[in-house]
Image 1 (cartoon, rainbow, N blue to C red):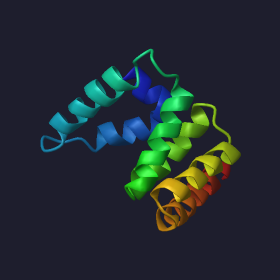
Image 2 (image 1 turned 45 degrees about the vertical axis):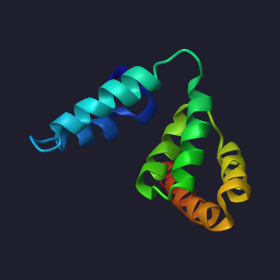
Image 3 (image 1 turned 180 degrees about the vertical axis):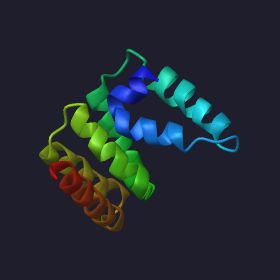
Image 4 (image 1 turned 90 degrees about the vertical axis):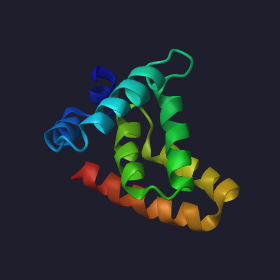
Length: 116
């Protein structure tokens, strides 16, 4: 949970925890233990690199809500808006222009929200 809070921020995690009920409790436990406890906590890659990979995968798969969340997380992990743009340009070449076009729109909204 500590890594999840460091990467996503307390406000996001607090909202997710508050929205957890009997139906979603097992899923919340799963992502906390495996995504954050096992993968994001591994020493093999730093958090900046994990953010780059995560942005590229989420953009490629059109997971817009998760992408917006991880744009904000990438900023917390030290990426600049320009570096995020570079990741999305790479997505355009390897996953297609439509995927990158959509991802740029999502990222732009997330970055604007962070500026506010």
